[in-house]
Length: 119
View (cartoon, rainbow, N blue to C red):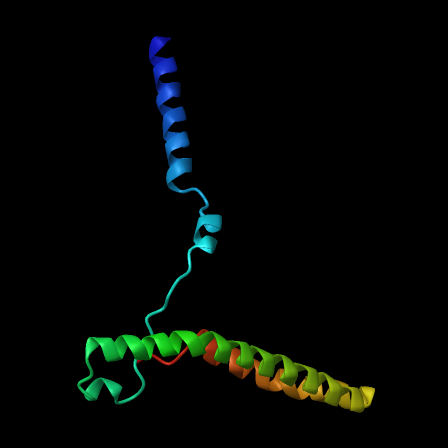
């Protein structure tokens, strides 16, 4: 009987420990700001720059990167709105035909994405 209680105690400790080890730390990761060390532009690594110059270039990339990303997101959203506005001009028959044409092309696109060519 004592052996059974000991076994239950050990199992309980293992469960508690595994929960702590494999717990969800999403909130902790959200608070930390990840600074991605960007690559230098093409051919910049061949210029023999000092570490200070490389740091300045990465700082510049860090400053402009989020701004560029925001603009790219804005462009993506505008293209989506443009596509929807253009579809509003089409008749129901034309919209149906457009969907058919897109679906004919879509399986080939999905196959390429799911099976990328090996390098």
